[in-house]
Length: 270
Image (spheres, rainbow, N blue to C red):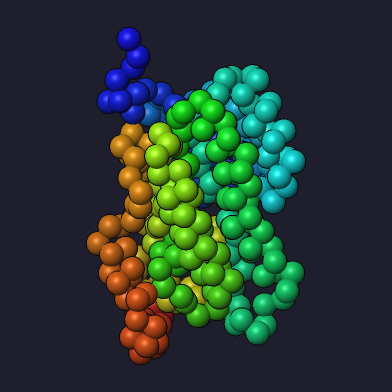
């Protein structure tokens, strides 16, 4: 007799996490291990992976530039030969290169698109055929509240996060009759090195209008989603619903932006 759906959802999963060297990705790796999952931590930063493995010697690590489709194939082939099929793909790798839209370089805009969007698409392109062949699998794409609402000095970043949301849900519709789970995770501001570098920018001021949360809070929501798959996970849920609603009204968003910047400045001064 096969494993029941409930039992299967609680069984340990073999999980590939991108951008796992630090921040949210490292927290995902740690909490997945605590939950009993087997983790393949990937990142372009070799030194960050080495530090992660010092604290989590049970994990596998793989150097991966998510922009490189051939590299994806090699990493997944090697991982599955070594430890068996991958059950869960967590596309977490991302970059944020802020600045006014007319001042950010074309190279930085291209990097943002290639890492945040093409990187996630490459992961799906590599793992989805295997998931479909095995009739099981779970794709978790980490986006942002920026998937719902634009922000000053984050034009390319917001564009990619909007795109990741559309891509995730469109893929789910393509394969709505297949036993594959699709989850989009949209966190608010998170205490990461990426965010810290934005403290003095307009983008950062808006972000800091609400207290950033620890990466473990996002990671915990992702671990919960592995156990009980959902199509969209907002962290925190109430603020996510508010931003998702406000994002429907660009004029309202524009009128409230000055107030948000004032709150952010006060929060940074405290």
